[in-house]
Length: 219
Ligand SMILES: [Zn+2]
Image 1 (cartoon, rainbow, N blue to C red):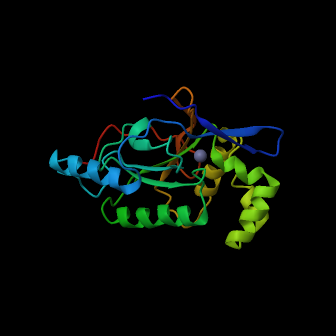
Image 2 (cartoon, rainbow, N blue to C red):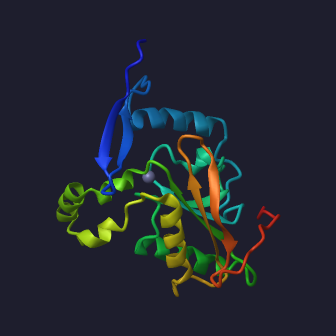
């Protein structure tokens, strides 16, 4: 099979830089879309991949990251079934909906763990994020019209400097009165070129007090 050259897309980021996307050119064999995923599901179930899974996250971890297919925590963090709650959206941003999701899970877990830390929320933004498109004036205006959103708010969703946006989102989460004070927070950047995660802000509580990692897992 001949190897296709990748098709690259670029979006201006508004700061003189462009974000590059490899849109296609990867090897694609067999049926596409959900048919391929369904075949893999049959293999997963036959191998018992679902067995022993529990609803409470074993690592006491709640990951917020981007929906980019390069940025799946099951791969780059090696998360197994039941290891963590994961919410993904464009950029991995702490939107009002995501903050409500954290508040919701914290309220549920408070019933299970009467005292002490509940779980750690890890916000992970990444390099070469497609959300940089929100910094492109033409793209943003057109998209804002399409979804009926406030254009100025959309501009803030661009991840151009992932370390900076992680810090901003952590501050949003920490300062949210909806989230239990027993939740801890950490911030990280995933580099899609090296495959490595760098911690920007280690785990701390709402007051910014450091929280050492827990050694125990919930069975
Ligand atoms: Zn992204």
